[in-house]
Length: 262
Image (cartoon, rainbow, N blue to C red):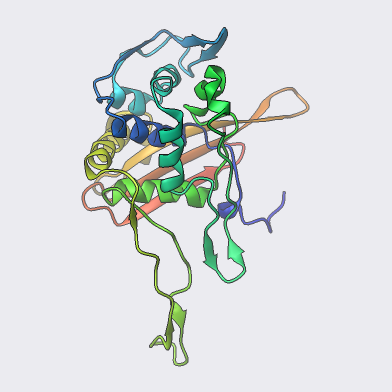
């Protein structure tokens, strides 16, 4: 009910969209895609039960299947194996917790990341590993993550203004784009590209399969901690992806406030 708020720039709970960053951190830290977890519908960390959206469980899953099915227990167990400092360093490198100046007087929210100290708490690390807890990010930042994966690992700084023109054709003052910097390795990016394509072809993102060609993507359902009068929690739905699957040209992020399921 607030149509003048530019939601693309605002911080949100991002839920399972963030699992792509967790997967990237794991691959960069030498954990192979074959790492497997038996999902029985939930997992216990530090005395607390974290449930999967599939209460029956996904059973034995490797990284590809966990991304395809968006399995929470898999990513919780994966996150427990990561070095939190290196984990957060990768998140910052690809754009999280950094405001981006898109144009004069137009910047994105920086969003939030937990501290290294907070991630020493295993339950906090568990929440973070499936995109919940102290993490917030804007749709633009999720698009930056998608770009980094789709372009082979280069982190980008998006901008809106190409320059100034007097005749509508030639730029008299050109605003140079910030040079991309290496965010993740090309090998990590290529592995995640294949898994995102599999998510659209065979997994939770099949509703996003284009009529022509294919795409890569990731679904998400993000809890907000905000409850309606009837006691139900508002859950935001996300879809993030790239198109086409081969030689991607576009990063696409869809946020549906209160949409329940990605």
